[in-house]
Length: 248
Image (cartoon, rainbow, N blue to C red; front, top):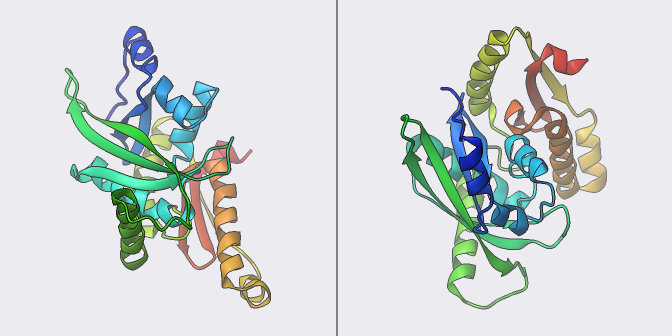
């Protein structure tokens, strides 16, 4: 499927909106970002709109709390591929602030005049996340229920610890991505990465710190290859696919 392109006038009109929203499209089994509004940039503290587009296309969940990443990503996948309802509450922070805020996102699909199916997602700031807040309100109940479900069910398409695509979904993405690389005259390559000494590290520092190391490593490879080009196969085993020219 080809990426849908708004006219310059339409895109400028949508980008000027003070309502926090973004418009996405599923292309080659991955979500691409077509529009981010001014309200979106302000909510997530982007002073540079191009950086917002880059982050949403390459590392959409970088600010999401590690415990919420897989659940949020999996809900987005089901919404994009199966038309499932998208109504998600999660914790997120920005590059500017280290404080997590509770974000409530709701999405709907719509069809363009030329037959493409797009998705519009609205974002609402529900306030600062306080892990010590014991107030029994509806939002806290929803968030706690979501966290509980994530801890039991884990993810279907994303690794629960790092938020990277799991092995099965990674190979689906890689199949479509490699075809696109070859169509553009490139040569796809795969990298398989292991962290040496994880057993010793866990023995010395504990498994919690080991999880922090794995998450940090996943963010390092995402920085260079984007979230949907990387995968954690399990334990300390990672994989990446890319264009050979990107390795130079």
